[in-house]
Length: 235
Image (cartoon, rainbow, N blue to C red; front, side, top):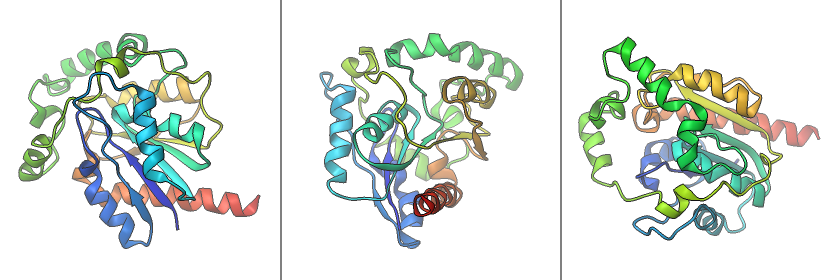
């Protein structure tokens, strides 16, 4: 069995993974979904990685998963600990030396959002979170999620260059959400091969797919873990 380390995105908390966590635990896996430091503008990406590494302690057979902004932290963890597989779920793939603030312009994300908004009548990039983030999440659950929002990431974490010189030498998978109205699917279909040299896998659902389709997310993650475990045994 694997230990899944689930890293939440911006403004979020570990609770965002609770339905996926339940599915993985039901299959016998161990799961960690720590709250990264929030409401503290001095915290850096290194501080976020420290919080995750501390939560992991001495656990092994690690599958590290970063959602959205969590993709800036997840590779830092994978660079510091033995990890079987690194998974980005609708993740902001960083480049060495690139700050999160620079990522938007460097990747052409905003242009992609504007182009998709023209096609779907303004659903993509909507200022209404129930339209852009939670459109496929049950309303009561979406309201609960919004009630847990925090100031995260900090200004310091957003402004500092991503500290790694290269992507960690760890098997990496990317899952894009086919109904994402925050990061258009076509945007990631282009960016993932450019930055990671792999083809993304796809899942039906919006940006908060861990809340809207937790079983499907858990099944994908468990599949990645099983493949990584088989590869490790073969080696």
